[in-house]
Length: 487
Image 1 (cartoon, rainbow, N blue to C red):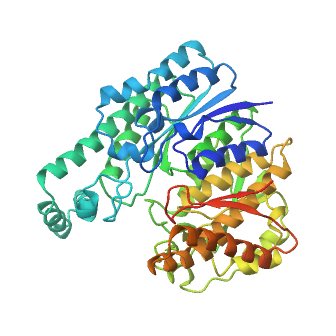
Image 2: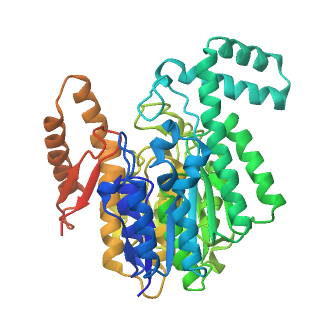
Image 3: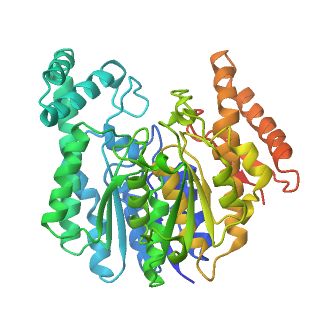
């Protein structure tokens, strides 16, 4: 049996549990450190313990998947807040060098999330000053970069106006933090050039077409090209799903396989839409995820091992969590019939990715889809957060589900949990809880309502597939829920 050790990005279900769920589909054993050692919204991971854990599991693993941000900073959120200098961060990565010395042939699949640039005044995951200057920093970053491309005086005016409102010491601190993170990623590319990593993914969290993060991406891509490591270093949008993608990549490489996947877009023109929080059209985001998993996209379904059916928006994504642009996906109205026919009678293994909206499944499509399509005949399903999160989850699932030794029971469990979370929670229940919270409901009431509504909706839509769930709010907020199928 294949054994893969995974050092997750933090303790959330999508970063901790999901890679193990996906690995189980392929019959792999996934080793994880104790969840309590990992970081979260307020806690820094116990990096010394995790470094020692990596050294211990290296001797009994066929491959390792490593979140560099966890070992260096203590997690994803700490990577945006940490005061540590580059020297201290590199010291925390010393166990990786020891691991490589002890096991020079052990495949190391690593990833680092390039520092995001959030267009909001919410400091929940940022430094304290973000609630006052976040949008101004974003505005300055975006327009100063676009000015370099367009030479439009309006961009220069907007950038200068925004910069003038940001205290010099705040901007200096922000740029120092970005510079440190960029230097760490440069170092990781150099390590990859020295054959230290089997794979290195530098993924982009919450981005747009312009900004400091896009400029950094271009510089890193140039470095990848110059050092000729493009076969094992990939730069593309993603974050929380990357551990799962690397589990799939490790399994594909260990099995000596390069699965071929054909995308079936519905509507077809939707593949050209630029997703929210990303810097490229949907088709490029999907291709990046397929390549990151060690698979290959092909244009002809007849030549593909599997098909990925995609529900796309008409004109642009909406955001179901923030209640933004909710009319855009159906303007003009979409015809779901071709998609439903594709899923009803697939000619070969077919998975389904729903990216019409960010942060949840398409609320107009799903009731009709589950009436006509048996979700447990699919080879993967997801519809959560960004398009990159959804695509990465489905691609990783599909790569594992088409292996000859795939465990259908494990796949069915994953599909069940994703239906409960991506559709019923994110699209239906969460808006109800958001309104209740705004009206003053406390957390016990919100949790009880989640349990009640999830049971009601599951019984309504899936009476032939009874299920019971354990639920919770792991980070004490409504943005994500922990929804686990009871055994």
